[in-house]
Length: 419
Ligand SMILES: [Zn+2]
Ligand SMILES: [Zn+2]
Image 1 (spheres, protein in one colour):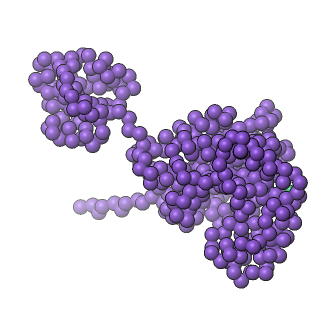
Image 2 (cartoon, rainbow, N blue to C red; image 1 turned 60 degrees about the vertical axis):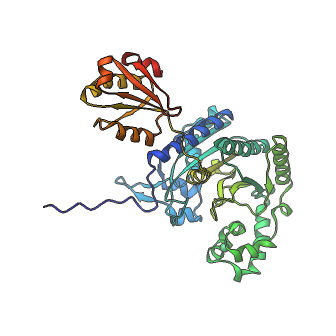
């Protein structure tokens, strides 16, 4: 006797998406393609593996993503590589690397795919997770910011998620943010004892991030903190006003929340989040903002950019919570009883599938009762019943599973009947 081989489990924090759920994913992805397409965005597919250096520079050496969460490794050729932890840096790299910025001074990209961060797994947060995102490169006009926000809200409406809130802010620019940061550090030093360990570390390197810490005591500490609008320079103030005006013109509902910041180093001015109350603490379903310094930081020309990313797992959870399942294709089930019947229907099934019709059947040609049960489970719209009697007449019984009506159709007419 040989011992039973041990089972190989999926890697922690990674999840198999099975066919029933994948249908919903397809719907989400197809909606993204359709909606983003109407705003002029084309899909970009960048590699999952990039040089480690890209994320060090593009995401920021001081971020917890780069310091603690990246899957990085040295390959057999001694190159330091990493699995991408987010999409923006790769898209910007490709825009520079391919020289696309020369022919397309204004470029609109969207992407969809897996990202990798070694975080503590929890509901809606995995180590391999999927993001759909957009990047608009080459425009600094605030109307473009408004259009990006309009596009995200349009996408969520179209995909069928309701009860979302759009919150916007401006985190200033390299001209005015140093003053804001200094005032913020001053304030936080006066209530240091209330800050969590993470925020204490952020105090010097990235004080802005303390503003959106979820810890109760940190939230208290920042209640009376300096507020961005008091520190905006004239250009930043003007940019934010025009963003709001454009959103109003497009009738996009939003609230101003001056505690919204972005976690990555390269953001400036517009920052926004789309949030839901329906997922507990994990309440952001999409987030984005402007990153005017990034293209230059990655060795490209000095061109501005704005974008966003949304977490697909959380979106799927929201859709499932609202009772949505993936659309089922209309299935035709062939219930062939006996070997003769099975041989008679095989070429017909093949013809139907070539016409793009989804057909399922039971190779074992079990009892009619068992086959009807299976058809029911599949949600088949029609069942074609063929036994020895039917073969001798050259006919099949077609049962409409919704209306329960039955009719006889000639075997050779079946492909025509369903097309
Ligand atoms: Zn400014
Ligand atoms: Zn904190």
